[in-house]
Image 1 (cartoon, each protein chain N blue to C red):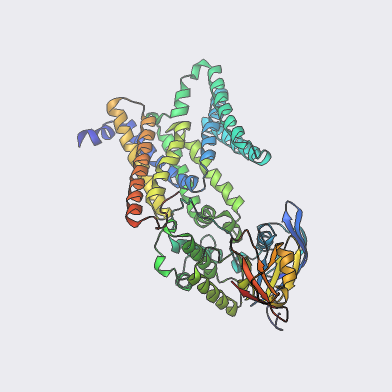
Image 2: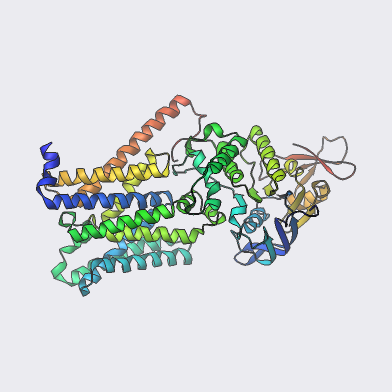
Length: 288
Length: 278
């Protein structure tokens, strides 16, 4: 039991990192569920790239990184919206280029000041082992907000995931609740950059919720699976990082991605076996 | 059509034009759908059926004219309206059980925070029983066949207890048993007081409705099915109408509805009313 628990009891930074990871896992599981169900992965990716120049710019002029991240997220949502409305044919090209441009802009801003060039790695991949009590408090508030808003909007969010038109007809305007959803994704990305970094938060949004989608038959269960997988990934990732002296945030995301692919392989195998047993006329099971 | 003293009409259209982005696809629609009555829209793909239905439920803005739905603007009374669109659930990752989908039919009445009461559970159970999917309540939606999923969507519309039910090709994908349950369940909804508007390719089904509107990017005809479904008008609506070469008398036609996949044979009787041989 020693090497599995002792690192967290003997080192306060490890305990803080674990708590931060648990909070991030819960927020990411809730928001990630809607990212997966609504097919918003590209928005999550856009935000993950878009906040980098915002954070770098804010640090350059002496503002809190989170303020810059918020501005970057807003610019990115606006930019993606504008592109998808204006150009129908080449929107994926334009959006992809926008991602890279934002990333490049972030790197350019960081390189402008040699003093925090080292922070680039911290922004992209997080500094979970450097989590302060203040960071923990911010993360706790953000997770509570994500939880409360998702609970309040549970019905419109479910309708929106089922069919946006049904949400409209049922009197829950799909545009309004889509915007609320985007704000929650942005909030999660902005707050989580301290912990897992702007690039890796995308993995925490997708991997646990994606595995949950394969395992669960209800949306609540999907979120619970996602949170559980995220928490296990955090714990295992921190432990591996501690014992083998490798980057903590990246290890956490690697564990989460490994769990996702294991679940994907397992469910494919299971579905393959059941449809082989049922014969070719059985209804398709699982996502096509 | 509307018996005296009945409630306000479910749909009242005066000179309505429907379409996309302000461009009229079907102009000049004058129509009244009373409570407890039904209307079938008949036409080919692209004739404007879905556009009209989507305008009725408020998903598309009215392009011109005045349209009152349930005594207000389209989409203004969500608690009294049910809609089942042409929904294709293939490749669906949403982890939902059939009963969760039907339960969504209660959301407009419940709002954001209303607690689900026992009468809501009863309505959901009754709707699933009516469509013959009670035994599938706890099955994941994605494990159901296309026809079973369509029954679940129709059960969702039933669970809403709406005053106006709008259905876009409700029987597509349903087997014979499903069609029979659909007709029974929605006849019961009309007896309860609901108005029903559907789009269909199926002329034999359209005859069952109080009113039939033939659409071909314009209103070809509107009225009781027996008056509307004549050879000339079907020719106008579908473009192709073949005289059946094997028919004893010359009054028998085949509607070659290429999009729908199977031709339908129509006997135009001595009084001009149709008798449909599917």
